[in-house]
Length: 441
Image (cartoon, rainbow, N blue to C red; front, side, top):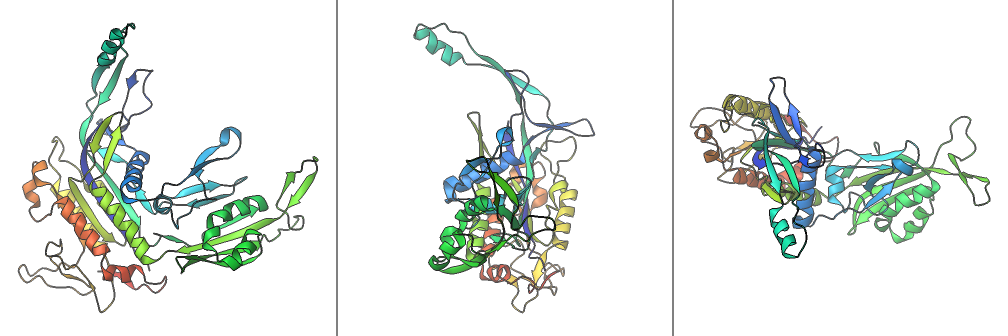
């Protein structure tokens, strides 16, 4: 059964987070959405958010920056991760954010993002504020240097607002490629290029055979530990095809040469400690995330957070985090309470004698066991066995006092990190496929 997902919905404050194409050469616009009620909201695209996160992970957490190559023909060439040099084994961003590596024709090797993001959408309406700008300081310098001092003028749209976004980390797919889903057929030249990305993980005695495209099964190892395998076969012929051919290439003499095609299956399953390291790095990066754009910097650090470890691989609370209509800093507590309820209803718990438990005295669940059976709260005579994350900077919101039982956002995420680092979570994540006996509580 599913291992579920980690999902958080986060609110932060920012200004002018994502410029749009613009109107003319000197009017800088913001990315905007129009709602049915006539209100306009600005947003930061999923791609911009992904860039901010991956940039922080590379610069501050040591994630490897993946080399990019141009692939395709003519005007159809696109920028792609270079899979002849990189893969999810060592390049964490390829693991978390996915890729598409196109081959000739319609063939492609695709990995869907393990960590899916929403755009960051403003909670406050956009009123089309603008500012008029000129580079007066540069004009003064030009005049001092004997140059003609002519200012460059431009308009910018401006919006300061609270924004919300969500992410979902698929716990079944972190650090993993299932060969049943990842099968690709390549011509000889492309097959050799593709396999170069895995060459260093194949044993010395098998490496030469694999790179010569000898059919067989090749184990992958990292630091002496098994992490997967490559299965290499000559492509099965379809009815009407030439013997062992899939395409043709022009030779230098202008004659056509028939080429052999190969079917490649990839299976990867990284050690659980490596999977947990990547998850923890990501969660730590979220706590102090920032966004630099056009010389400005914005803190994207959470002012509000809600989420948890759930069976539904979707940001359940995302549409329910809103401001009370007509206000700028008042959260809709009723909707958020409902979001908390559906998160609890989707909470995933392991069926074992040794249940998940948070040992911290600051735990959002008061250190109660996460077991299938209910555990009674002695003071209120209520049951609460769900693990969810709840955090808010109370003074930032008009009705912050309504969230008295909530923690600081940083403390709430730290508790989640502590749990992800625990032996109980490690054992849960390390269960073999098909043997994971999980259930909703």
